[in-house]
Image 1 (tube, rainbow, N blue to C red):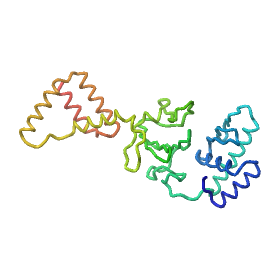
Image 2: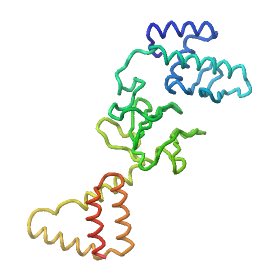
Image 3: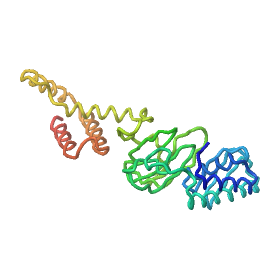
Image 4: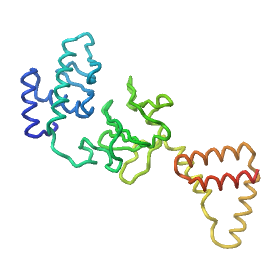
Length: 266
């Protein structure tokens, strides 16, 4: 069970007695509200009807959708817990940037524009970055040109979060994972195309092997292969290079140099 401070322990005991709930049930709801940043909670508590969702000032959803008394109880309980979290140290202090901390994302990202949790997954939105925490692992994504405005409600068994941007809804699985030594890339499968494109760029940038004869043969081979490119093939390569430039794998100067070289070979 979640460890509480002495203040938190006493507050939970008081709420437990007033609401007629077990100590464990109140702690469960306290953790859920805390994970939702004090503004929302997703929970699965048998004493409160099983699975449900609460949003501060918004809708409260429970399994027994017509049980308004239960909804009122959950709404009052979660509002009280949110107030307690805002004004008391109910959990032991954990250093920022640590998974157990309220600030679980890397400290170098600064303050997020929004945070929350859904489907037992926590998220934090930053300029051009999206941090996702699930099962004790944090994955950092590049949001590209998306201006993320909020998380969309998911239905069914899909545990992938979907966010809204100026281009509509965007799935986390469609965003590239940022390679960082401090993160485990648990969502690398959808980056296969990006990895292949990066290998292509490295091949384009790799210097020829040493030795004048080998260098001459390599240059001649490259020229022959390049001359066999059709216009469409050349444009496809330039498009891939442009994607690498947009993702930061190539500089503008490198992109323009490669593009000019390819266009001259058409």
